[in-house]
Amino acid sequence: MTASGAGTGAPESRALLPPASAPGASGGITPPAGTGAPTGNGDGTGTATGARSGTGAALGSEPAAAAAVRAGDASVPGRRISGPVWAALAVVYVVWGSTYLGIRVVVETMPPFLSAGARFVAAGLVLAVIIAWRQGPSALRATPAQLLSAAVVGLLLLLGGNGLVVLAETAVPSGLAALLVAVVPAWVVVLRRASGERPGPGAYGGVLLGLAGLAVLTLPGLSGDVRLWGVLTVVAATVLWSVGSFSSSRIPMPANPFATSAYEMVAGGLGCLLVGLARGEQQGFVLAEVSGRSWTALAYLVVFGSLIAFTAYAWLLHSAPLSLVATYAYVNPVVAVLLGSLVLGERLTWPIAVGGAVVVAGVCLIVSTERRR
Image (tube, rainbow, N blue to C red; front, side, top):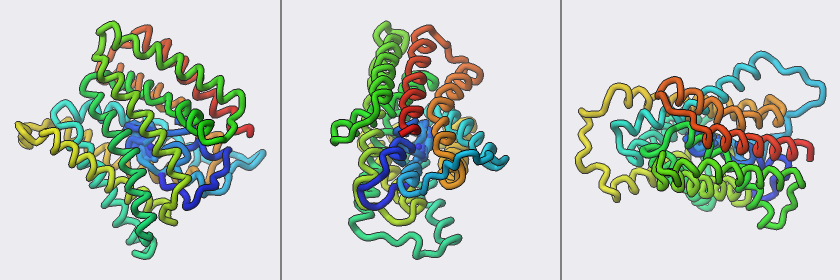
């Protein structure tokens, strides 16, 4: 998946861009996809979301993309793309795309919500320390209203969005989860229309393609190839991530986008921990039985998914054309599917291939339409 700007007047052409992080990447994160996520995502850390983490991020990426709401449009006609920009973009492509794989490995021996909570609280606290060290404690300053807004958005993105993706990945392949998360931009367009905005005709076409692809992607659940509840859980996560992304640019948020992401990660992480305890995930969980592979994946999600990729994405929002940055929305799901197949041996069935291609085409149409507006 992602800090969002204070106030409500985000330019329409930037409201699509996320972090942390669509759910999953970002942070998950991904996090989080075109108009909404990490790739989180998925899980995404996303740190990037709708106008903001996560991802997909991806819902694998962290909540940081809402900085796009406040950053000036870095797109300059005829501007040459530098090597550092391509390097940062490669980090966002690969790291946020890989967060879905990381989540899948983590939940092999760790409880879903407790592991997600530990990840986000750790990442949020480390980010806050870095901010205070590099920019001074005043950079973390926020009013009670801004803190409340950041907490609400963090809960929507990281508990509702990323947390549900982590839960679903105990039952569905990581590649399928990433492709389901990729539909986030379509939900954001629907929310924008419901609020009175008028997206272009191409955006509506992208929504129809995205929903058609989503219908095809649910076929493995209906046929019994994967558990249907896992598919529906990811769909619910995309809706919650989209609501959080959409809301982030319309409510008062802390002035510093990095501080906003830190507060969101801590709030969302604490929410995940509380839900995990309420579900009884601590019962029967023995720390000594966690595999080294799961520990490594968790550390990867914290350091690379939530911190390094988030920082790269936030820097790109200020240093690269937004139309170029937005391409993560359709690259992350492809990376996730390839890694799931190569590393975990996940089968690439025809519904996943066809449905995923349709969803990515819909996202591509939405992003290309919005960047022309």
